[in-house]
Image 1: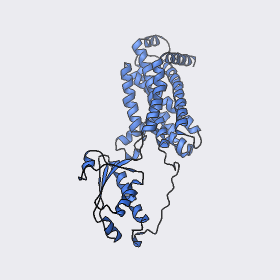
Image 2: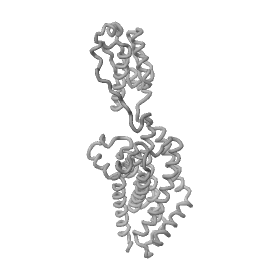
Image 3: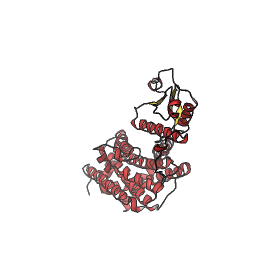
Image 4: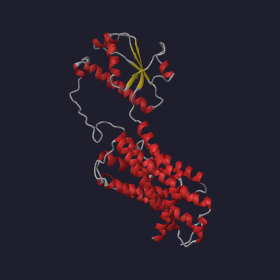
Amino acid sequence: MNRILAQCGKELNQFRRDRLTVALAFVLPLAVLLIYGYAIRLEAKNIPLSIQDFDNSPLSRTYVERLFATNQFVPAPLLGTVPTAPLDRGIAKATVIIPPDFQRQVTAHKPVTVQALVDGTDVNNARVIQNGLRAATQFFLRSSGLLPPQAQSPIEAQVRLWFNPGRQESLYIVPGIFGVILWVFPSMLAAIALVREKEQGTIVQVYASDLSAMAWLLGKELAYLVVGLGEALVVLTVATILFGLRFRGDPTVFIVGLVIYLGAAVAFGLFIGARTGNQTGAVQGTAIAGFLTALLLSGFIYRIENIPFPLSFLSNVIPARYFIEITRDAFVRGTGWPGVWYAPLAIGAIGAFFFRLATRILHRMQFTD
């Protein structure tokens, strides 16, 4: 144990003396937190919508006002008399064409066709626009008393939003980005630290000593676990101040999951460092194998259920997936251990697997027990 602590102290001293590494550990995670926390918005708002009103009647103008009163759409120019011109130029995401006899047909309770041309480049955004236009039209007809009595539904649905009634996207995005930040940067630092010893030749001294591969790696694991906890403390403090995050239930599952997750991240970095021979390869390895999978296959942005097979199967071995479930439960739902008890176990198993792989690789590099 004394050897492991001595190795840990040596790693922390080397880390403290390297200003670039310190900046990589604390400045870049904060930059990623701010960029993702403020920039990513999954709810479609301010969608540019152009209107071509051939009726120009009081009722059609009221209808247009109703569309923009939803705060989901903003006016976009027409660019002449061609309805598709705003879509072709990318100025609008949708164009609504109101026919000349709109008011007369509606007041007579006769069918009238309002054509909506929607840019389908982004399928999800097109679906949001379609649903928004339909909902605004229904609300316009009902609030104006223009729907016939038989069209009134006898059932009224009362909807309540649980966990996030204000629909604050930061409560969804920021806990998710914790999983990305706290996976990528501790693993990258650990990989660089291990590869640096290869490049500088100091690993030969370890080969010549009686220090085992497991003890040497445990020293590095412990050191960068401490660094990772420091990163987590800084990121959580800033997120609490800027985004108003608060624990919603028992925080122990988050604390336990955080320690296990950081340990798994460092073990992954040690595995990458053991497999690569230079710092460039270590950074690229953690960026490709770590960052991309944590970003795209963890449920941070895209729902796991929407990821096609076999990538959906691969997501089962992505630790960020389970940690994001822990963070979103801790800061949004608040169910505690009964809801996410399995997540720390899955993370710990994956982390132990990476640490075992790193140990075996170093054993083959002249280490002996």
